[in-house]
Length: 572
Image 1 (cartoon, rainbow, N blue to C red):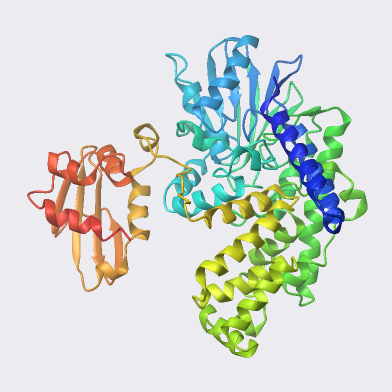
Image 2: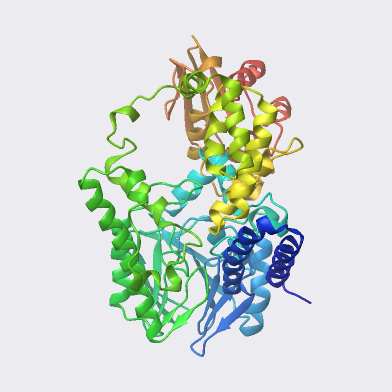
């Protein structure tokens, strides 16, 4: 039987050949170009064929079971898991192979960083035996996990769904650049909060294995790498994989310090590893390890340095993004093919990291609102209908990027919405179908899918009681603060105090259409008594808030209606 990846490759090749066979002669050339481009991406899926790579020194790397790899290190009386997959089901499948190799207890789980594809399967390993393993990470990892699942959850979930194509039919997703697919939405999330953390470095012996952990900012600020000195083995996390890195990711991210990324790679190079077991794509060993680390860091430094050089010459980020190309001796490496990040997106992020969003052009400091700009453009074009005709012509002539920008203006004017959206969808689909970069491809195809009349969004991160227990109550109050609807809070001054069974105190003061969070319990208009877990479940929708208040699980001192009215101010 064909594997998941093999079936996808076969499906795409069949589809492209079918399209070529049915096309007329006018389209043959463009179809052939499309096949060549997509064939490169299809072949890149070979990097994710399901397999456990085992080495004689007790290292095992599971590739292709999801977007991220998992690593098992054999110890004397137990084993260590490095990165725990993106779901409980995925971790279970991976461990079904690991346990056949060595079924000793899991003594530790190490997160190389906060991303869900490395942490959300941890509960499976954590609950395997009576003795709970250590969960080790950088000291800031839990904060970043909570940030993703908390104040940024709606927008990060939506943009991640687009970038990884989680709402697309499986046949539309060739791969996601660094793995076959993102499976986080297909199984319960099993994140476990770290119980051992460090700042700069941690040297520890676990199950007889000497392990060195080093903070190594790169793809994330909390990134670490694992060094096993006796094995001469390096686990770099997401600081290197077989594609140009996401120095910026289009799903959205805190600024990635590119210069620190280079320094982290230099630290790895200084150890002269014999084995490289990345958290994405296949392992390397021997001389290729140091050669690849060097090429990779040189590619990143080149983009960084040339962006700064051209910034200092006064060029804008858009200009620079079209001016920089990697030198041939670097671009020839398969490790810098643009199957994940791109040089263009990286340039804009580096510019923004140093100088912020303003590109220096006075026209862009306080530009006209989009509707005002669109109206003036329509007048200049001879009216809204002329603008619409230009959109139709652009789509007919396959000038699709221009079509997208024209549709932006027509949508801002609310002109022929249904027809404009249909043409916009055609343009998005066209570009997405031809995009070599999986991030761009999946984002475009997902955006086209969202324009279907029957589209319904699917949650990427479903909430569970188990997941909520690993998230601090502080994050929930941060969430409330950023979700206050100012229209509903006009003219209101109110203080609601929360007294938890743990002894923790939290207070929200409404004034001036903001919600101030503090730990003072004075002059309370409403005093709420409950447990932290019950409140988290009610706020996350795991429990019905109205029924939870009515049942008395959340006590309000006889002010149930007032408290529910207070909560309503945090809803759109």
